[in-house]
Amino acid sequence: MLEDRPPNLDYSRLVSASKKLAPSAGKPVLRIALLSDAATQQFVPVLHVLLDASGFRAEIYEGAFDAIEVEAYNSA
Image (tube, rainbow, N blue to C red; front, side, top):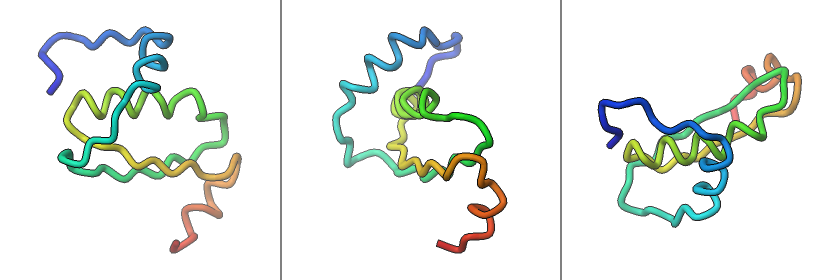
């Protein structure tokens, strides 16, 4: 779990750490759909690392660019 101090949010460090994350079968899965009208590719590795540090294994779905409404109404 994260401590009561602010996390180190250095982007380069977080991206590097995301490449070293090992599959963690023992952690609960947190499923996230990331919908946006802007690029989100740089945000995903950060989410993986921060959620892993908080005790979760993230499964992140990235919706198509600028298709928030279409993705939100898609039941799949």
